[in-house]
Length: 74
Image (cartoon, rainbow, N blue to C red; front, top):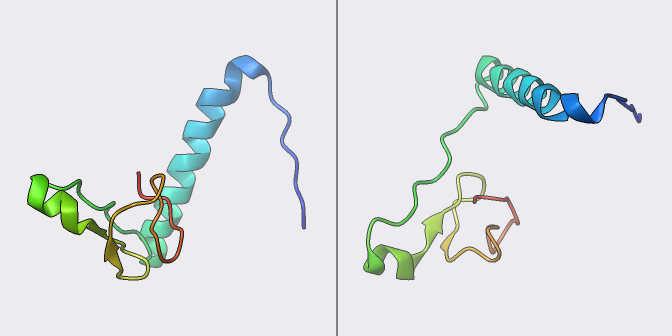
């Protein structure tokens, strides 16, 4: 199923915020919400990478994505 949403360019940021908020609320209701990973606190932690909340892999990010499952983390 494909859906299209046509909006004025000046309304894009407002609509995106509303959609993001709705999505986050639905994740909370369904119990699927999680906190994004915290950035490394020091150089040693940075060498070990971050732990992906989706797959549990602890590694350095690749262009902001988990090196194992590809989830965007920042």
